[in-house]
Each structure stands twice: as C-alpha cells, then as structure tokens.
Image (tube, rainbow, N blue to C red):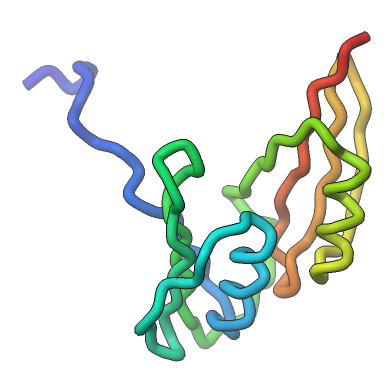
Length: 126
C-alpha cells in the first residue's frame, strides 16, 4: 500500500482530558446546542453530534493530572454573529483571552471552564 494514498480514515470523535467530565460536557453541550449522551459514567461523558455537518462527537474523560500547558489542539467555532455568540459563551462560563482582527477575519480566543482554549471565528467583508 502506498503510504501517501488516501485512506478510509475519518475522525470518529475528539477526546478532551479533564477533571470534571460531566461539568465540562454540559458546558460544551450548551455551547454547541447538542445533547449529552445518556448513560455515561462519571469518568467518561460524551456530547453527541446531531448530524454529520455538526462535526464529530466530543468525549470528556477524567484524568488525575491538571492542565499545565497550552493546548496543542483546539476547536475553532465559526459564526456570522460574533458579538452575540461571544456574549453567550461568556454567559456560559467561557473566559475571553485574546482578540484579533486581520484581513477580513476576526477571532476571539476563549478558555472553557477548565482552561482549554478555543476560538470563535467570523469572516468579515472588508
């Protein structure tokens, strides 16, 4: 098999290590307007995808160590209503960290309740 040939792989889910899976899953369920999967354990909670266009499910798994460094992977959330969504995210418990406006794009970096970074992105006409 050619190592550079397309494969049949796809992203099944994104897994986020955390201290409180239930609380973090509830935050992200509200952010994305998705349901928390029923029947999960206290150490592993999932937020279901509502359809293929909504992206993969998110899994939250309890780990003993705290977050100590910047994320190496983060979510980018796309919206046409930057101000409204930023206010909603803050109301849900997100903390704004940085904002950049450049070349027709605007993004705000937030931290979720456990400090995981994510971006709110809006393409703007110039």
